Image (tube, rainbow, N blue to C red):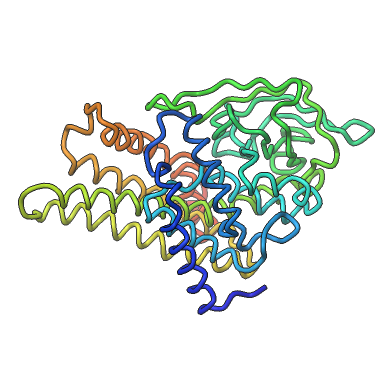
Length: 389
């Protein structure tokens, strides 16, 4: 089902009206005290978005969606953030891993994705390992296929978002030899309540246990949980990363823009006329956000058209980390020392956001790795060992 521009505007206007009328959602604007509370708020918002059809735009009907353009869904989520509501934690992972499951394992997606879209289940993404962070092809978690097609998984994942709470994990594992690098990989959907799964929370600087390391010891995974087939893991991962740099980057852009709005409102309440330093700091953050928005909108348009974006998404990743860190640096520079030591909820929220923003240049592919990808694959610059020849 195609969605024309006038139809898109009508849908967005209807969403704005529905959000204003949803009095019961107002408490969800308040910062959550801990991760469990944040996820409960996220589940409530997921249900509201699903029941209204708002989060189902662009998803196939077979997985609980209503078709149409995913661009409508992205604009709805942006408006949600700008209205002062957190984008559901569930979606920050699902919008990355869900499309890859739908694209490469449609039967599995039809069976499992609807519960995730409703917020009944929380999914996570299992890529990073202690010796394989940005170098994803170096991962060592093994998935050995038995004669009946069942996989036996052994290994460890780390820095897994929501890993201590998630119901399932989209897991990239090695079914071939380590020396094969990106060849011989398999993507699996694993139930995290399976025997042999051990989860250990990792606390952020704020104390929130948003991350976890997960150990797999002889975990059995049925053959119908394979995403894309044995040996296709790398191709599925590369498809998945396009959405991490597209839809995920868009959501993070919307969240950072909401933070900048909050910062400007806080500054407006202060006495005295705005000075040039304040204007310069806010202006720089705003310009970086708009550059990210323009770039990510282009990426989303290409993905919606079925194009393969590939290495160009490294540009999106660099813009995302720069924009997010600039917004939170601006808050630290302009709100004064109280937010560093204040006990009030607002100060605690700004501190937590700033701490988390430090990781923006690492998660999803370190900044230095993105520079190398752009130099090698887009600009075609000579490699370091080729210079001077």
